[in-house]
Image 1 (cartoon, rainbow, N blue to C red):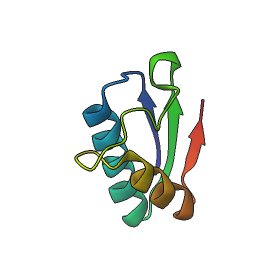
Image 2: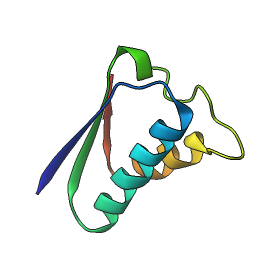
Image 3: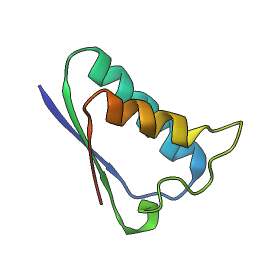
Length: 69
């Protein structure tokens, strides 16, 4: 199944959870694309120990997920 996640909220917790979900889908064998809409286009903004967004983005890319802005 092909899955598209549209991320348009700049809140770090929402970005982190969306990427966690995308990685779960990739691990289940799905094809996943994440589209970053204008407010969320700076995906790394808000990266912190509580919400390690960079780690999730890196894992997403290494798992062959598609990230578009």
